[in-house]
Structure formats: C-alpha cells, structure tokens
Amino acid sequence: MSGFFGNLIGQALGALGSEGQQKLGASFQEFLSGGGLQTLLAQAKSAGLDDKIRSWIGTGENLPISADQVRSLLSDAQVQALVARTGLPAAVVLPAIAELLPHAVDQHTPDGQVPTTTA
Image 1 (cartoon, rainbow, N blue to C red):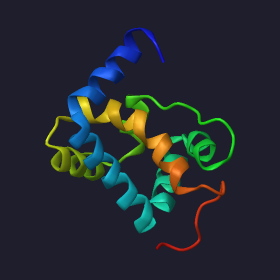
Image 2: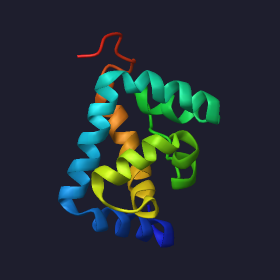
Image 3: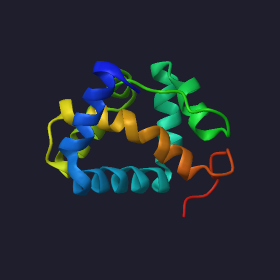
Image 4: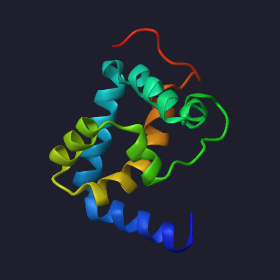
C-alpha cells in the first residue's frame, strides 16, 4: 500500500506503537477465539462485506478493507471496547483495525474454514 492512504495507515499503526498493536491484536484474537468470527461473519453479511471476510478465511488473496468499511462492520459497542482497550481515539484505531483485521482472521482460520468449536 502506498501513497497518502498507505502513509495514513502507517501513521495509525505507528501511533498505536508496539504495545498498542499487541493490545489490539490480542483483543481481536480473543474476540475471534470466543466465537467472534461467527459474529463477525453475521455482521459482515448485514453490512454487505461478507466477500471480504470470506477472502480472509479462504486460502486465496485477502481483500483489503477500509476504515469506513470497518466502521460499518463493527458495532458501536465493539468500537468503543477497542478504543477503551487501547486508550486511543476511533480515528486512530479504525485504520489500524483495517490493516490488522484481515491478517488476524487469516491466522485464526489456517485451514481456510471457520472453526466449528471455540477453544
């Protein structure tokens, strides 16, 4: 990713710092492991973004997602929980989520399928 948007994402991730990135990543891994992937799939379908989530689950190329699409994907409560957990405003957290979420879902579904059990 290059250009202005790529720089913006880089700045958002940089603003999180390694500790913030770890907190955000841990939050998503916790969410996904606790049945959140099914929730995310349902929310993606409602938001018209299920093709993106399915690309992250599958073994092919991961489709990108924008911060605006992340905002339409997540509920207000989910966004506020992430803001509270990182201590950063949504304007910084949402672009970082857009960058980190495809990778987190991809890692959580190494076989290209949604796990049937939560461990």
